[in-house]
Image (cartoon, rainbow, N blue to C red; front, side, top):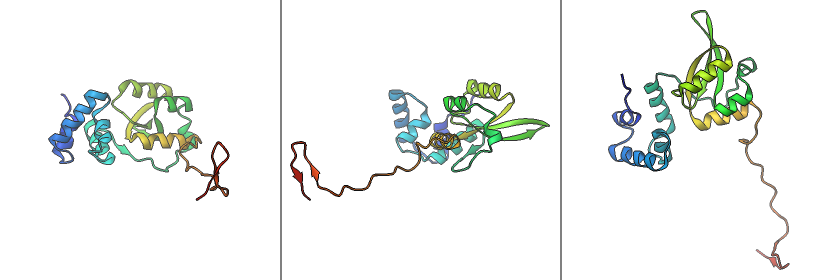
Length: 172
């Protein structure tokens, strides 16, 4: 059984029209990548709507990680280097039929090779969840103390007038 294309699902929900879908398909043909990324890049659909529809299409839950911090015991289920390289994040451990399973956020839970790698690295079964790319990247950075996503601190404004290379002053 083949699954319904994401563009058709978004169209059926009234989130995009034929013209927008054609534009996104042309963008995808020209630049490559996934159709969802093309739709987001063209600002045709909001990320939360795309994620909800993708979650339905793939049969996986959608998570918004936000500022939520993962328990250290859960985070240690996968090596930091692996998490960063594969862009996945363990979120919780649940018990399903008396067996522990690791809930993991993925930007593309339909990539079965990555899902299998995660299961092997964790040494346990996986329950994939879909997360937005930016949300996931920021969460991974925050979980491992990477401050690249912290607000930028700007220096104080200068108190003297600017000087040109030849020594002249620029007065306001």
